[in-house]
Length: 304
Image (tube, rainbow, N blue to C red):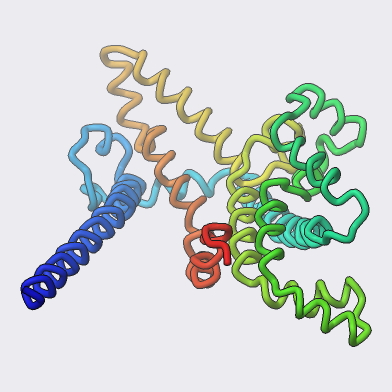
C-alpha cells in the first residue's frame, strides 16, 4: 500500500512537472511568435505585406521601412532627448522615491501614519488633465525638457512598494548602526540601499520603460519639434503615414495604381518598424536586470 501511494505521488509530481513546462512553453511562444511576426513585417515591403500571408519570415525583404523612419530630420534629436529623460529621470525618481519610502517606513517619525495616508490618497484621486496642465504652465515647465523629468520624480505606487520592501529589513541592523553612531543618511546609504538591490532594479526598470515609451507628454505639453522625444516623433510620423495610406485607399482606378507603384512603405509596415526600434533598447537592457527583477516582482508576496 505504501509503495502504491509513493508511486501515485511520483506520477502526480511528474504530471505536474510536464504541465508546468507545457504552460511555460506556451507562454513563451505567445510572446516570441508575435515578436517574430512584427520583425518579419518590418523587414518586408509594405505593399507586399498588405497582401497577407507573412508570419515569421519576410517574403520580399527590404530595409526601406527602417530607412523611412531614420529619414526623419529630428529622429536623432528625439533619440537623444529620450535617452536624457530616461537616464536622468529614472535615476532621480528612484533615488528620491527610495528616500521618501525610507522616511515613511520609520515609525518614530512624527505624523508617519497621517502622512502615509495623505500620500496614498493622491494615488486614488487626481485633479484632472486641465488643472495638471495649468500647474505645469505656471511652473514654466511646458515646452521645456524638464517637463519630462520633474513631474515624474515621485510615484506613490513605487513608493509604497519600496516602503513594503524596506520594512522587511531587520531592525537589528539599524539599531546596531545607530549604536555605532550612524545617522539616518548613513543607514540609508550603507544598509538600506545595498540590501535593496532587487526592488531598486525592479523600480528602475519600470521607470525606464515608462520614460522611454511615453509619447503623451511630448505631444501635449511640448510645441517645439526639436524638444520632442523619440516616441512622440515616431507617433506623429505614424499619424502622417496613416493619413497617406487612407488617401491611397480612397483613390480609385488608374490613380490608385500609379500611387501604388511609387509607394513601398505603408502605415502598417512603418508601424512594425517603429515597434522594433522602440522595444530594442529595453530588450537589450533587460537581461542585465533580470536577476534582480525576478526577485523584485515577488515583493510583498510573502510575510515572515
